[in-house]
Length: 301
Image (tube, rainbow, N blue to C red; front, side):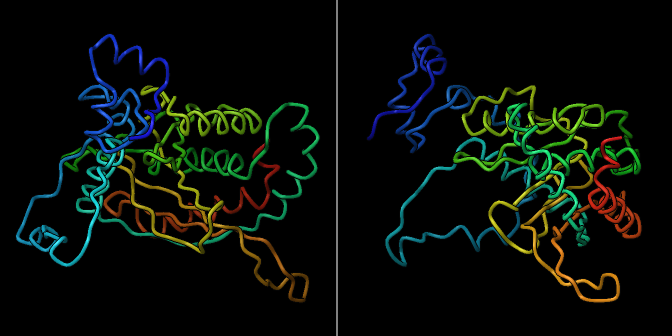
């Protein structure tokens, strides 16, 4: 096996606990280890809280198969983060009656501002990404539509309305999906949010996100714009009641000032818990959201 990759703090903790990192890496089938791999509980569980798996049925026999009987296979153990996320997402898909509403918003004015403020960004040492505008727009919408900033109690009888706005940012890492949270997003300015996004995403990739920096989001943004796609149906992350999906900005033709013109616009995919939110509210939510993006200077007030 290649040399084990672990931070000095992980090595110190393993040494204090008498844990053989080489043996642990072999058991997990990986060459990179983090704090969550040294104990039964860790940041991986905080990143995606364990949820009860759907009730087993006869259907499970269809994937309980010895695939080796059909040809060569290789077994790759899933990281703890991936396992916890899988349990949570399976439960969400089984228990939440989710619907996805699709819309789009023009982004030409956002891009104009980003270009105009490029020098200021260099001076601040902050890259002003489109995602920062999305976080600010979402935080405004969560104040405008309180039912989206809520959670349903497990018995389905009470809606818990939140008096804070925390926005989760899904980050794709080599060891699983991590969702760090921007706290009090509605109280922070655009530049502060841009800096925090960069910090959280960088530390998520480096496995340096603390457990207290995850969980408790009002709503999550899943952004695939840097990869591609024209739309998708994100799975609601319980106990949240909605999630916003973003894909790559596209060029479309719209009728402007009496003639066709090319415009840049971003696809918006809003999945929501239909027990709490109805379709008309979802449509209004995304129209309001699109309005903030199309008039971004309103976000600076």
